Image 1: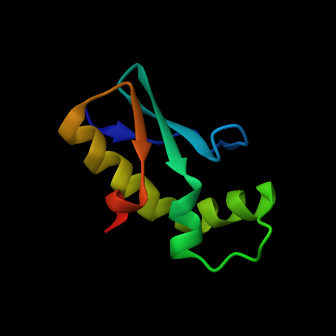
Image 2: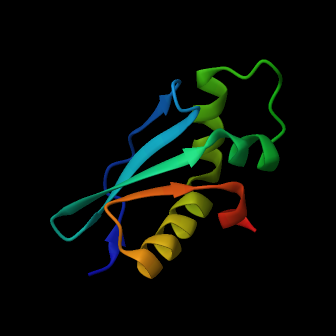
Length: 89
């Protein structure tokens, strides 16, 4: 099956400093975590960066993030995946 992202929700994880979202491979939920460094490298964010700024940056990059998530998942097929700055190069 192909990875799909039917649920647009995402949440900021203050403890781990990044954004969590999920996709679905058929009936299986696949978890993703995007490190905050991805947003500060690809979007000019004012310091200090708030939760809302991270969520807005995620929304602005959603298509790119989902494409990178699909590529990473297709090569590893893990239930949980972390996306780093390196994944976006």
